[in-house]
Picture 1 (cartoon, rainbow, N blue to C red):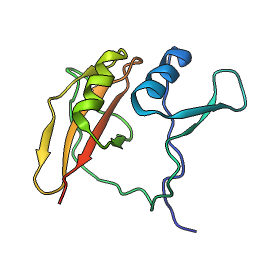
Picture 2 (picture 1 turned 135 degrees about the vertical axis):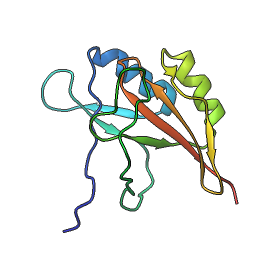
Picture 3 (picture 1 turned 60 degrees about the horizontal axis):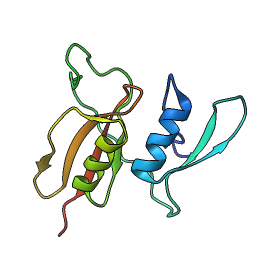
Length: 125
């Protein structure tokens, strides 16, 4: 059995608010499962290969808040539209978008719960 990432979890103080944010920004669906305020998240219908990972030096994306744990980056089709949706639904951009030449354009945001994540749009070849 491969040692692939099997699940991710988003921790929230206000689960309904966080659920609303991710539904409206990324179109994810949520199914109640188990205890109250616990949901399975469906991020899309297509089957994807194993999740690729990175190992990097710890960074401070939020002032006085060095990253702890695993960092998640969400692939999007249009980074500019996603940035607009993040801001319209209570999220906050914490970096400007930047290009990794010939690979992706990336930006980092905080969700309504203060969680930090990235968004990336693949460079069209």
